[in-house]
Image 1 (cartoon, rainbow, N blue to C red):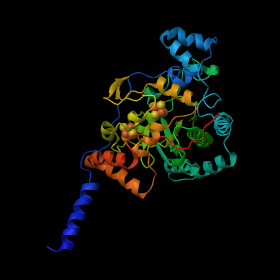
Image 2: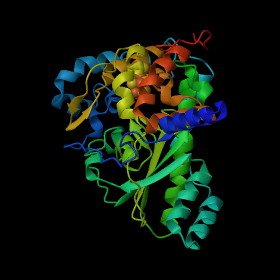
Image 3: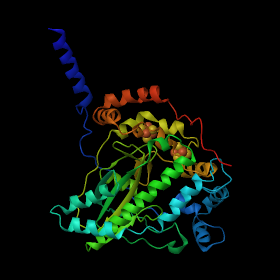
Image 4: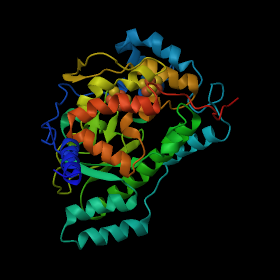
Length: 390
Ligand code: SF4
Ligand code: SF4
């Protein structure tokens, strides 16, 4: 046999090894759903927003006296984006805060709404045209799924104005979409650059979801935007159901091509939509052996061991109080677990090819974990120079 023929046979064998689905992961996944709905009043950001002496504070801690002392301790720490903490920066912190504040005032551009109304209205494929609208507005991925009641909050909890109101949302479908977070900014974790990038993408997501909701309403359907601090439903599990990715050990969505460097937005609606199915990227198996986020977490908030049952779902629990206290210490988003995740590398030909092999092949998954550690380190390396504050 000639050397050329042997080379071809070896190359073909390698291709088979790398690209053939050697396990059943291409099969569509069924995701377990929680047995009980969540109350937004229990979410860490809602608890952090309570002010001592207010009716909301008294109501919440009369029901949860065990949490009062710990939450008071966190609230006494320097505020996010405020002076007095390790990473406060007089310009970037203020810029980040302005993005969050401006989200409230976003008004959809009337000309854009009219253009997409006409495009969708005149389309033979209205479902496809709606998805194209999200991409055109800046989303890097979009999917749709049934709005299962299990993922709708029972009560509002973030702001005093509607604190304790029962959430009533009967839209049959929800469109989920992703916006990408900048790779270089995320490499600065934990720092105010991460906070600024996060705020910027939350803002972009809110522009997209408010505009898309306005278009669907103009078409005569009911629609509601779900964006930063204004969620009636829990987006990461719905994004999984809509085929946008999987949730990893760090309890954050891992999307194809971007890993965890994404923010999620949503529009619930009664517009008739086909529903996507959950996909597998090989994350579940990869996370069993990886643990890189858990060992890199500076507050030890992530579970490095086995999964546990949380509200009827087997998952790796996160200690949200420890995580959020670290944010307050830093006065910034942390972002280390997002940035250190091997799925979060740049979206380019090389990394997307590796992602494809990881998706299809369990052997490659096991091989990729030590290789990633060899090239990028076993744990997160804090950036050398950071924009530090006062
Ligand atoms: S954001 Fe930071 S502190 Fe929080 S879980 Fe991730 S790595 Fe840990
Ligand atoms: S860092 Fe590793 S263990 Fe953590 S979510 Fe990413 S792949 Fe999973």
